Amino acid sequence: MLGQIDHRGKRFTIGNKDVVDDVARDRYRRAELLERQAQREIRELERAKAVAGSDGTNPDVWVLER
Image 1 (cartoon, helix red, strand yellow):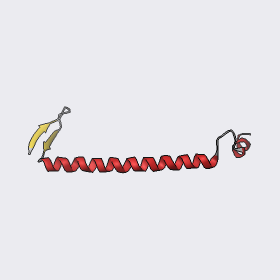
Image 2 (cartoon, helix red, strand yellow):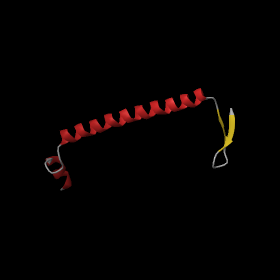
Image 3 (cartoon, rainbow, N blue to C red):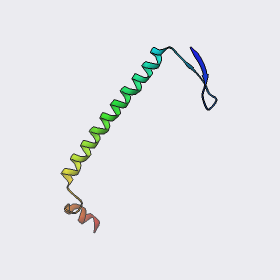
Image 4 (cartoon, rainbow, N blue to C red):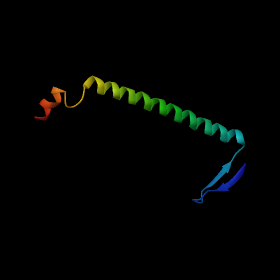
């Protein structure tokens, strides 16, 4: 292990290559999962908008705005 000090003066150690790779792989997996979740939420929002219609053609919105 190699001891280092970052730009803030905080100490950290650099382990062997496998440890760093495991951390990077975990971050990559989490990023992939978050990306998939975001895509699902975008699709759900688009479906909801398609069902609700646009603001100009939805009579329920017009009634509530009065």
